[in-house]
Image (cartoon, rainbow, N blue to C red; front, side, top):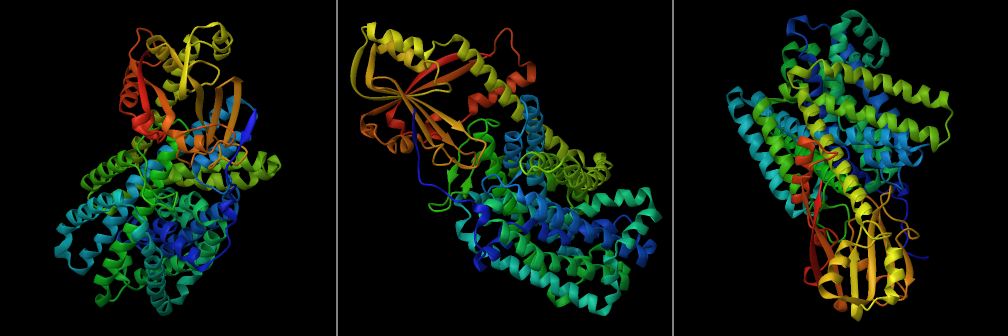
Length: 630
């Protein structure tokens, strides 16, 4: 077997620290968590009537928010989870692949796969809720400027959301350059506004003491536990720190958080608390009330820009997640457009864009206000936190060789915090908490149905197909005519003869001079290493078995990779690609029942063609139909 390769790549997690990277991090990574002050403390205060608010309660809420930022973001994600990079890439699916690599047996791999799939499903739920709640909370600042503008909040929010999704097909390269500077201004402004209030009441800084949070929980007991469901809104977006690690590297994300983002967020939250202590009526919307009247309209405009940036980051993340799901066999093939000639990560997935747009608009229409939508937000976020924690514990135990007590001690503590947040949010199930669970469950059903269906198809195909070894052994005695040129047969298993070849022999009775059996495999790594890219065997003269490997962050390009194979003659103009167009029909007996079988057939019929997905020139393709019963 010959091993072929392409140019090597470096680990993105170890990128050097540059000012441009620090600014870029603010625009992409911190949009979601950076806009949480718009609604987090306001939602917490909403559990109390204005007259029932005491200084101790406000101090307690500020303490809980502060320590949520420290424990969940600073310690869990920034300090520990970000160490578990998959060749520089982060995110729930990258972590799942890393954990599966360290799994001891197939049963454990399956369990870890389920955890990763659930986390990915909840991530898509988060991807719908974030734009809705962020834009609604920003536009709601108009109510502070003038209560008469309240009826305009919903239609203006929908208009902003529609415009946001319409521009996705143009790519984010042009507007992306402005994201970082805008978020720099955003964090400086919210930090400064908070500082102006803290100066009038510096005693509010005492709330950093954990005793305030402990006394709050003991005093309110069950009600204090319920409030945790709102406290977690302050850490939404923490998963983005890990998911975007491959774009910027570990160090810029850590430095930006520690020395800029965290201080600005704490200043704003504590400034809001100081304002509410001085003026309890401001609890209705403390973020906008914190600004002088002459700055409120500019603050609404800046907030809208910041929430658009936060939404853009989540949408781009959903596109990236969708591509990973396609590559890992969790989604059917979808159209993936590259919107930048130089940046691999800038992609546009039309089907995902449409689904997200419909979902976000429906959420705005149904919930109408950010306060109502906040009830639905926490379950998606905390559910993803828990899935990440489970996978991270496996990775640190197996890959980093932590002792079992150490792994349980560290991630067990994080898990208890995540469980407390998640349990508090489940109490909001009938008040909107069902929304992210419904979205997540739908995505999980789609993923598992497609995965199961494809496995059944491959098993049945292998059972009914002719082994390639037998075909090659019979070839010298056959009277098949060999003609000039190259024929490429795409196949899912190199050990069996593709149905397209058998159909071609049956109807045309010829075999090309050079025959390539090509399979595209997806690795459990973001990019294929030089040694993994291509493996070639020549079991018979002129017949080649070629396995091309791609990472789950890559888009396969079969013609380009075949042209890069050294030592093998390949002329694109003399090459024909033979693909089997599979047509699925329901079988009398099937391992997929009722709705799941219908769902699989629907996805299969609407999946992107292999020609487009593998970037094969359409004028060089010969498609041969194959009917498969399932």
